[in-house]
Image (cartoon, rainbow, N blue to C red; front, side, top):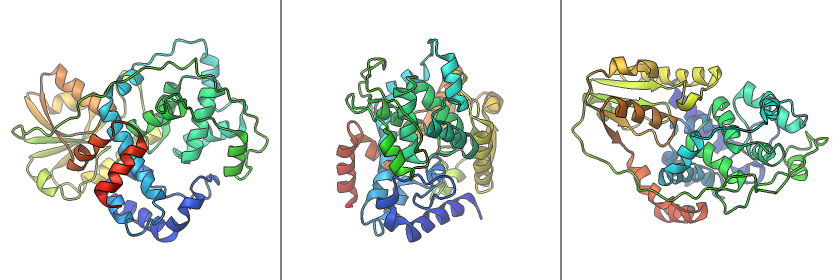
Length: 371
């Protein structure tokens, strides 16, 4: 069984057996031994092993409450919003922590804050490389409004350890909790909410939440022009990354190149590095994909200069705003190489509607898809 069959089996099992109760149970975090109330496909969707638009087509006949459909639409929205506001990403990756909170930061990262639920989630993040979505929100809220630590450091912690780490969803979700995406309306965790939706697993936990937001730096970000499909002459090589691995209907594209390089990028820009478990997880996906594309080869980012030496133009499946885009774009600029980015038509279509709030985007998406 290849990775695409595995992912679709997980999705189909959820739709058949658990989708009907999703709208009632989705907010509950019962712990690592019971995840049947959520789909657990995020590690596939973040790498586009499962393609968002195809999932939504599959859900049209099944998701009568549309609650799960909305979750997939959120992922499309976040991706489009970051494409419309690239300055958010560059402000985030260039953040430098200059405070005197080093001991507190270490305690938080090591899961030694004394806040039971938070320390448990840190352990779960490290050991299982996953957190329930509601727990991610509680975690981020405690990080920002109880520990009063920079949201950027929390976002980096998630990206380091999550199998489903995604530049747009992760970065913008942390900003949403901080109140930077919702006109200064932060998400404030509460003991009552945590107790209810964790079925009192942390009933002894004490949380002091401050809604004072003056310690959060607020910057305005103007929208930028969206990318357009350019028609350069194809080079003889194609590069793709781990965050857009869907190969359905792309055999003709791959066959038009003498070589398809699947680029690994474990060590990120600005000194950021993925955990070893995440690196190995991604490498497993890449090696699986490599077996399905006859003319492909896995290429480590540290060897890119050797393999692309003397190339004046390369074709690249557009990886979206994030570390992968930074890697290939910086490499091309330093070596005076022209990049022809290949975009998905679905992305270019829907990103046009992701310039403001989610509910406006969702309304447009539903109308265009007759949902």
